[in-house]
Image (cartoon, rainbow, N blue to C red; front, side, top):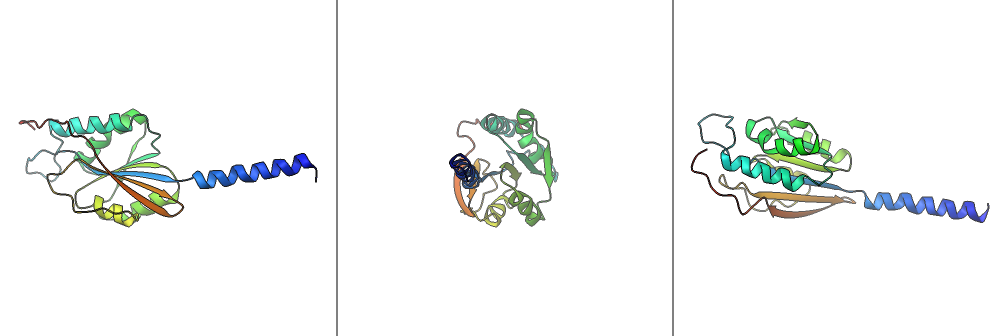
Length: 172
């Protein structure tokens, strides 16, 4: 084998092994934004909720999002609508009663995923992915944003807040 061929093979092997090392998933999970209290099972967002959705859209604007997942409720779809518009991606719906199906999809390949859910499903989703959800999400808490970094089978959980500066609106 020639020296050039041997060096080329070593280079290609190192190149592909680096791709494997760099391969990872980032999954961002959050509860829908503030919802109207209109007595229905499927309320829309409040004015403040739309502000939070806009903030999230701006925050994810320059990120290379692979896919956006939302439960099939108006408030969750509205929360990720700006992200979908900014990225050109279609919102993919999942059933919050069948979280293991969503987990299977998220674990199929590496990527940068956004998942919108509910106060009673997001911590379970984080846990099923191998992350650490911390305390339960209170019914009035809308700013918790989980970032799960999954690399080589290990999960790092980071928590962020979606915004401190949103002003509460008296009108929904």
